[in-house]
Image (cartoon, rainbow, N blue to C red; front, side):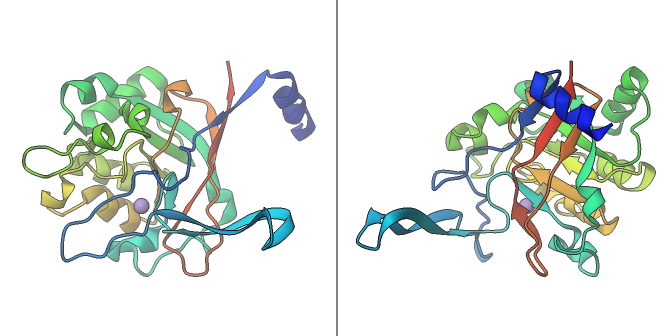
Length: 256
Ligand code: MN
């Protein structure tokens, strides 16, 4: 059976979609206001390039935050999940799930502060069926197309705040507590809206998801290539001991 899957991948009957944004020194990273610490982003440290430091080989070190570029949020990333799993202790089978892709890109184009509602979720279920166990619920905002354009990606307003879409508090509570999901996926820099620091509680998606031992997939690319249901998404963080997250190269398997 699994060998047939491989045959399907070779023949193209099963399409493999790359859900990662390029990872480099230009990759947009979250910027928290004073007095909070910020991530270093991604930096190459050149070791050798077929030169005196290594005449026959090219290699680099790199510096990267756990939450840089396309990445995984573990439950211990948030204070509500502080006693829960880090990337190294999450059961490995929880890194594979079905994508449930909720398309709100028109709402987000009209209002960059759009918050996915519980009604959006229920309407998705009316059209495509109950969100199954072991699924990734993907907020399809359309933001992935701005992944390499920091100005549009962050969409900083006159108020100095980023204006990017996210989940309402009610939608976050509903997904965390009423559906047996692995977690959520987004195209933006975090699983909460740009202005979610002002919400009660602050960053409600992080708050409720991680409290319920669920995960986040962040800064996804090519979400527009996913069907509403049926894609198998594999997202494996690095096994950083005690890590709160990790850059990932998630892939989706899709049949058309
Ligand atoms: Mn993160």
